[in-house]
Image (cartoon, rainbow over all chains, first blue to last red; front, side, top):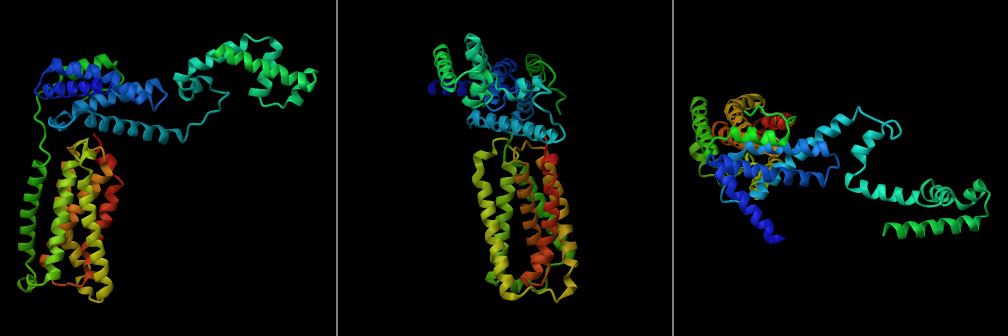
Length: 184
Length: 216
C-alpha cells in the first residue's frame, strides 16, 4: 500500500515536471488522476458531493495557475495538499460566512438535510435499519420506535398500548434482538 | 490570468486547462526577493543621501549598542524578506522554520527595545522630532512596501496573513535602519513611538486586507 502511494507520487512528480516543460499529454494524465484523488480527499471531511466537486475543480485551476511554483526536486504531494487544504479552507470560510443569514428547520427542508446533514456514506446503513425495522411485527415496531427512537418510558408505552410493563419490556427486547440478527 | 469557471464538468475543465498549457520554468524562490533587496537598498541610499546622514554617524560606528541594533535590524530584514519570498509558494509550510527565525529575531529586537526604553525613559519631551521622523520613515518605507505587496500578489501564497506580517517586518526593519542612519536621537522611546509605531499601525491595517490582496 505504502509502495503504491510512493509510486503514485513519483509518477505525478514526473508528469508535473513534463507539464512544466509543456507536455500536454502528461498534463492531461496528471490532472485526470488528480481530479478523483482530490475529490476523494475532500469528501472525507465534507459530506456535500457538489461542494467537493466544486472545490476539486478550484484546486485543478489553482494547480494550473501555480504550476511554476512546483519545485521539481521536491515531493509533489505536499505541494498538492497545500493547495487542496487552502481551497477547502477558502470554501468553508465562504460557506460559514454565508450561512449566518440562512437558517432552516429540519421539518421544513428535508432535501437540505438529506444532502447536507446526512453523511452519504452512512445513508446506506440508515436504509438497512429502516428495512429491518419494517420486517418486524407491527406491535413490536411501534413499541421499539416509542422506546428507542421517541424516548417514551416503558410505563408510558404500556399505558398507551394497554399492556403491562413487563410485556412491553419483553417485546422491546425481542425487537432489539431481531434487529441485531438482521443487521449482522 | 485564467478565465475558467467551476460550473463546467471536470473533464471539460481538464481539457481546457491542457489546451492552455504553456511551458513554464520552475520559479526561483530567491530571484524576486534579491531584486527587491537590491532595489530597496538603492532606494534607501538615495533617501538617506537626500535627508543627510546624522552628524555623529562616524562616532556611532564605534558604539556597540548602535551596531547591535543595526545588525539586528538587518538580520530581521533579511530573514523576513526571504520568508516572505518563500511564502509566495503554496507549499511554504515545508519551510516553516524561516518564519520562526524571522519572528524570533523580531522578538529579540522587541525585548531589546522595551528593555532600553525602561532603562532610558521614553524620551518624549523632545517634541522636535515628533512627526518629523514618522514622515521620513514613510518616505523610506512607502515604495518598498508597495513593491513587496505587488511581489506577493504575483505569488501564490496559501498563508496570506503570514505573508503580510513578513512583508511588514521586512519593510519596518528597512525603515529602522534608514532612520538610525539619519536621526541623531538615540533615545529608544523616541524610536519606538516615531520609528516603529507608524509602520506597525499601517501594517496592522493592511493585515485586515491580506486575504483579499493576496487572493489568487
